[in-house]
Each structure stands twice: as structure tokens, then as C-alpha cells.
Length: 290
Image (cartoon, rainbow, N blue to C red):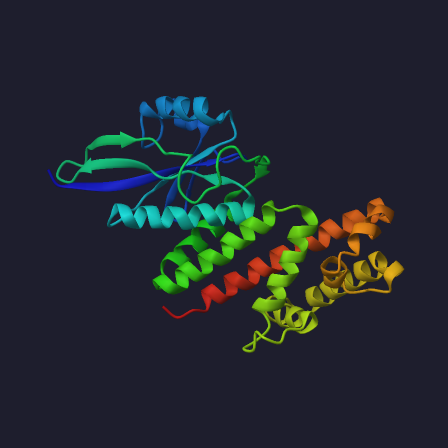
């Protein structure tokens, strides 16, 4: 019997209003639709949901998505899956399973085998990690799928390079706040340092990133934001560069005096720099000629 293969994944934990959506080559369903039998799994949807729920506790916080196209090989599907998993954790702090499998009879189109997804293998972090219940919407899923396809389309060396970057960004997201903030600034300083990576300057690297990804007004706003928080938080040490405050460990004494507004601003600049770095990496990938 000639066969062809299709794959599907589970993404969790998510808080989403999506119930039934077609997006960038995927059909996406919530748990209720899956259990009702109105997906590619049919009546097995309820069985697979129950298996996964007993294993990791899905409740209503999961989405199931099925590739509409078939992959040429199982290796291609798992390669795609590994990159997708890393991107989901780096961008949105959600977990994607290893793929479930649908095997079809080539002649009749009948699905002859259905295998459930596996949440406990692959490049995803282990299920013992703590995950926040994050929102995810159609636009964010489109971005996730589109970026994954762009990386997979690159040659192997480039694809692995960008996967390693998102691996690092994922680790930054999961690290303690001050560690992740310093790591973020250090990555920015090195990655946007230009051709000579042996001589870096955080101000020049920041300027390079902002020139690449920001319009004039946004660039001005970001610079003001960074300057204001640096001057405010580093006043006692006469140190106004936020990255240096962190690198020299000065935040360990300064943070005891921070106001609620100081903390709010610190979180805001951390999130903003993270988003700008992601935007910069996305732009790099989109400009690579395949």
C-alpha cells in the first residue's frame, strides 16, 4: 500500500478565543472542537484529548493544529517541529508538542493510522517547567507559522544559526529578570556590532538596531525611554547607562530604593528591547536570498 503522511501538533498552555481557524497552511481547533469530533481526528479527538489531559493537564488551555500539506518525509516534519517549538517558546512562552501522525492510503485517501502528539520529547523544555497562561491570537499564530517556514526554507547552516538565536532568546525569557536583562543587552551589543565583533559599543549597536527596525518617531521614543530609566535608576552611582548598571552589579543595591514606577519602567524597557531584537532578527531572515 502506498502511503502519505500528515502531521498535527498540540500547543499549550494558551488562553485563546480561537475555536476553528485556517491559517498559513494549518487548520487550528480548540479543545471543544477536537472533542466534538469535528477535526481531522474524528472520534479519536476525544480519546487523544483525554490521553494528553491525564498526562499534563490541558483543561481548556490548548489549541490543536493540523498541517494541510503533507511533508515529504518524517524527518522533514520533525525538523519543522523542532524549529516551531523553539519559536513558540521564545516568542510567546507557550509549549508545542512533538507532532502527532496521520497515515493515509495513497489510493483511497483513507486515514489508516492515527498517532497522538507527544509533549515530553524534542527541543521543548520539560513538562515540569512552570508555564504562564499566555494569550495568543490569529496574528501571532500567523507570525509563528510564517517565521518557521522562512527559517526552514534556509540552507541548513543558516537555519541552525537562527534556530540557535531563538534558543538563546528562549533561555533569556526563562531566566531571572536581571540576568535576562543583561543577557538581552549583551546579545544586542554583539549582534548589531557590525563586521568587527571584537570591538563593541552598546550605544552604536543600539543605534544600528533602531535604524533597522524603527521609524523616526518610534526610534526617538525608545531612546527617550532608555535614557530616562538609566538616569533615574543609576542616579546614586552617577551611572546612566542601563546595561552598565546591570553589568557592574549596581542594581543589587539600587533596586532596594526603586519605586513602583521604577519597576514598571524597568519591565517596560525589557519587553520593548526583546520585541525590537525579535523584529530585527525577523527582518534579517526575510532579507536572505534563498
